[in-house]
Image (cartoon, rainbow, N blue to C red):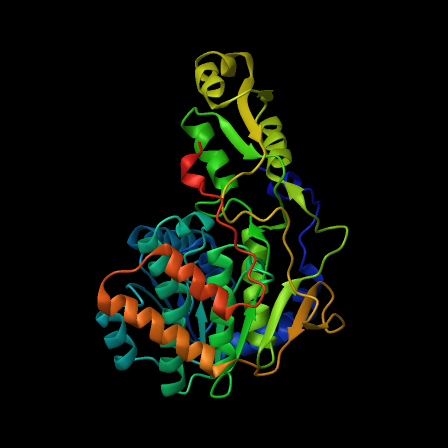
Length: 395
């Protein structure tokens, strides 16, 4: 499958920047030790492979998914082979006592990269999953930041999201609050991060869903009015590594926008995807018609599709990497932009967030409305609107 063609491109984004910094990248990585958290997800695997192929002294990968870690090892052994350094994977929950013991007994790393996250907009649909999102995206970040400071880690990188710029959903809001925590601890450890586009065909993404629907002989469904920027997995790994190694304290890296990176709708990608597979998209009036036609249309090399306008909570019609208030450096790299930050944060608001969330946990009872209202207190002009309908209510 030609993923670049599907997202409307002919070439990779960061080739020039990687080539210009290839030698120093190799020199730094080969002399350094790395801990990659959430390293078995799509972005985590891409980052791990970018580090591995530059022969690090040590690279340890932690992820809660045992199966994905197995596949990561198989993938690396089958494509890149072996290194002289220490490469190990650990199936651990970052929030667990076992992980803390792991850090206490080792924890000696030059770079810690945190790629773990609850990334789905749909994760805000209920108060329980929403609280787990807060734990993973915010409090696990704070915990691993404190551990990195205690272990004298040289640099802490944590992935953010384009949805943190003027957020309209709780996932983007959680990452925006996470960035506030990063600013707080940047006084004690050098940090950098990255906001970037959707990673094409990453696990759980809508494009990955297209692939699953074809394998399971099910209709393709996509919103007509939602447009996104896309990078391929390799580019996501390159962007994170460049920010980790070259980012100055508090820098946020993002892909520069040009003719090679543009917004494209999910429906347009679905049409290109089916065409690549040799099918003609057949537009249906509703979900029922799309399901009913699956038994006959594929034999005619046609595939039932249902494209509709988005009407669920948390969807943003377009995406952006930075806000009007943020200071940009667009000169340092060819295809990478950098948001320059001062250590500006509201200690009172962070303390309030800690206090309120911990009180909810101690009480053993909380509502989604309480959490949404708390996010509104921390994030100026938070654009969240509850439409009463979530992605799980659709096909």
